[in-house]
Length: 234
Image 1 (cartoon, rainbow, N blue to C red):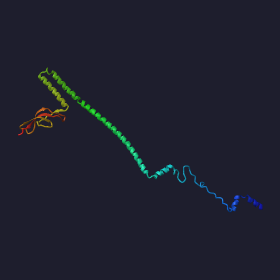
Image 2: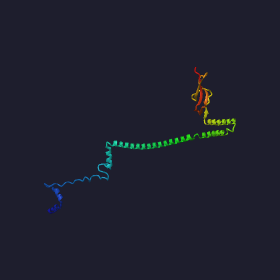
Image 3: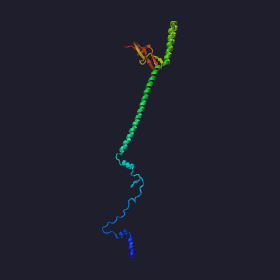
Image 4: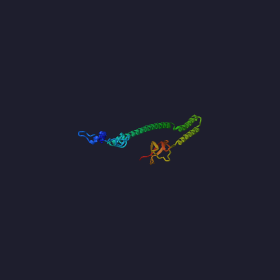
């Protein structure tokens, strides 16, 4: 029996003996097993750092938070907006300047064209009048050539016909002779060349018409040259 017990003791492990016997005096007990902190930690997905949500600590997010806490950021944003407005105003100013230069050039060309047309109009607007005047001149030349062959009465009739042709031409063009029913002197249409006092007058009168006056439509073309009778002074 004793041998069997001795065999069982010899088969037991040294660790068991050490546990049963306890630490001897002067020996350091073996350290207890330390739990692994990573063994119980939750698995971390790629791109997700511990202690936060996915991408919470990414550089862009940190930059955004930095801008949020940047006290000068509102001023920078305001300056950027002002620079954008200034650039836009510069573009608009360049467009307006281009439009102004184009309009000025077009206006200058229009002015030159109008001046040229006006000059041409003044040169050629009276073409029809000149043609009609040439017809009167032709009649005068015929009268000169045949004047010696005609008797006095026939020549006089020819001159009267030319005069009528010429006055009809003037009337056609709006040139009308100044004709007054009374003999009252009117400085607006009469030009006094000679004056003479006369008894029995209460106001100035036209004594003699030395040169006829004419109107062009409703405007005075030429005043009449007259001799004026004045009331005689006492």
